[in-house]
Length: 154
Image 1: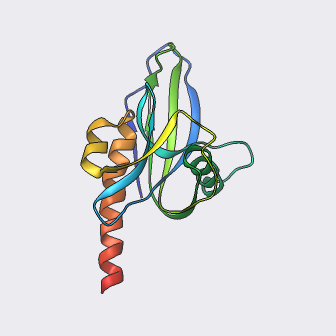
Image 2 (image 1 turned 30 degrees about the horizontal axis):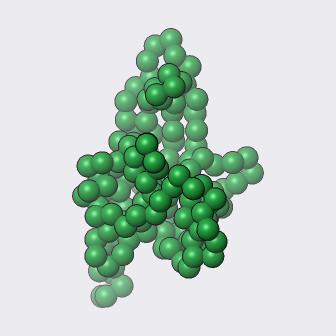
Image 3 (image 1 turned 180 degrees about the vertical axis):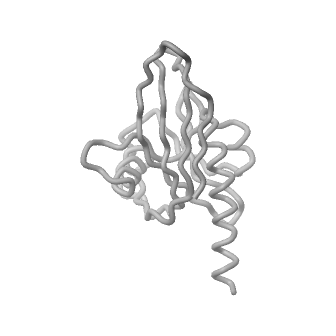
């Protein structure tokens, strides 16, 4: 499994490490389920891991909060990290554990009302994603998804 770090910590800054888990679901038209956050951009489905949560539980909780859908978490794809300074000036170090996923049914209205579920072409997400590590992870997930689909047909 690949693990990649984007950017490097700036000397003298104390970064907030934020482990997270994300699921990438695809449809049969080369699109991925992502969320658009008003004023912030496009992100993978998922978010920060809460105390006592594992990656699967985090993805299930976050997808439900962001979209109102259930999700089945699949194979782990990669780990991506990024060193950045947020618009607030806070040094931030997200550590994303990326999994393949499959959206289930809509069972509730989203709690996070500034998040909108969008089915976006893989290449478009890669060109517009807010976080570089998420754009990179999307490419790896798409390759793995296509490989698994071919294996199913064999």
